[in-house]
Length: 354
Ligand code: NAD
Image 1 (cartoon, protein in one colour):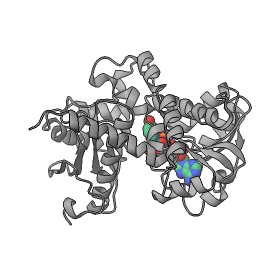
Image 2 (cartoon, helix red, strand yellow):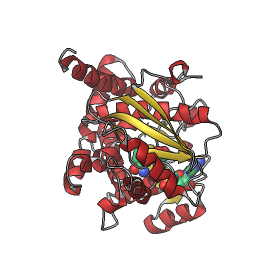
Image 3 (cartoon, protein in one colour):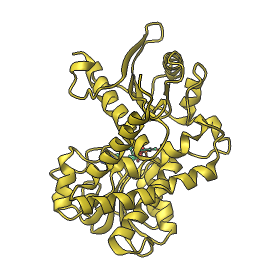
Image 4 (cartoon, rainbow, N blue to C red):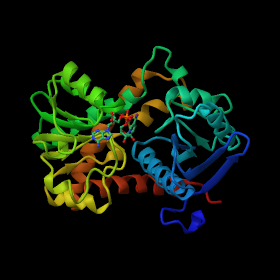
C-alpha cells in the first residue's frame, strides 16, 4: 500500500521512507502540514510489528502535531518521525544519528524532538548529525525534565475544568483520579497535591505507584478501575484509547482532563462523553505544554519562565472551547479541531497567491 492509499493519509505534504543499511535504520518521516511554519514533532522509536504499523503511526501522529501546534498558537506545522527498532538496542545512538542525517537533509522543513523511546539525552545523540532538534538534555543543564512543561500545562487545564464545573478553579479539596504515574502523571500529582487536591491514583508499575502514594499521601486504586473511581476529574496520563465503549459508561468523574495522547478510542467517543454529561478537555489542548515550552529553542534560548507563562494560555483556550461547544451544540473535541482548522485556513488565505 502506498501512503496515498492509506486510510490515515490526510493530504500529508511529504512522507519519506528513510533507510541506512549499514546501521540498520528503517524509518519514516511524515510532514503533515507546514502552513504555519516548519513541521515540528518528536521522534518515536518502537519495535513496530510491521512497516505498515509504523506508517499508520507516523501518519496519525504527524497530523496530530498539526492540530496541537495550530491550536496552541505556535508558528509551527505538524510532523513526526518513527524508527522501527527496540529502544533498548545497544546501538541506539547510531540509529538516532542516522535518522538525524535524514532530518538534516530536509534543511529545516522539519524539527524533531523526543517521544516514546527517545529521551532528551537521545535528542542530543540526534543533534550530533542534525541542527533541527529541540528538547535536548543539554538545553537544561540543571537537569530540568521537559516533561514538566507538559505537567504544568495539565495543571493549568485541570484548573480550567474546575472553573467550568464549579465557578472556582482551586484544586483544594477536589478529588482528582490520575491514571499513570510516569514522567507527566507524577509531576501533575505533585502540582495538584501542592494546591490541596485529594488524589486517587493507579499505575501498573508498583514502584511508581508506591512512590506517589508515599510521597503525596495519594489513595491507590486498582489500575483496571481507576476510570470508575468517584472523583471530580479523571486525568488519563498513561495510554491512548482509554475513553471507549467500556469505560465511558463506568466513568466516576464529572470531567476528563489528562495528558495522555489520543485518549478517545474513536472520534465518536467525544459524543458519548457529552451524552453522559462528562466535560472533556481535548487531549491535544491539555497536553500541549510540552511542545509550547520545549520548542522555544527553535526561536531563541530556552527561557523557562517565559515558556511557563506561555503554557498558561492553555487555560483561556479551554475556557473558549467550553463556551463555544455549549453555544454551538458541538463536542469540545469538535470545537478544538475546528479552531485548529480555522487557524490553518486563515494562514492559507493570507498567503500571497503563487
Ligand atoms: P511514562 O512512560 O513516563 O509514564 C507512563 C506511566 O503509565 C508508567 O508509569 C506506566 O507504568 C503507566 N501505565 C501504563 N499502562 C498503564 C495502565 N494500564 N494503567 C495505569 N498506568 C499505566 O510516559 P509519560 O512521558 O509520563 O507520558 C504519559 C502519557 O502522556 C503518554 O500518553 C504520552 O504520549 C503523553 N504525553 C507526554 C508528554 C511528555 O512531555 N512526556 C507530552 C505530551 C503527551
